[in-house]
Length: 72
Ligand SMILES: [Zn+2]
Image (cartoon, rainbow, N blue to C red; front, top):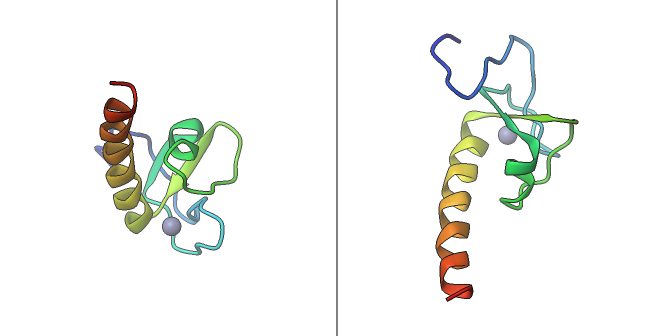
């Protein structure tokens, strides 16, 4: 729980993705998560478990590539 650049997540915090009950590992700006297509609850920060963090990272990468193609 130390050395987390994206934000510390306390013990007992669950993943903010709807339907997910894993405990959270990362806290990320909610809008950044929403843009990736993941459904999250919460106000300003979203908490992601290990699995959803991986999905989020993957989807943000993909979005950026798609945007580049779309706006060419
Ligand atoms: Zn999750």
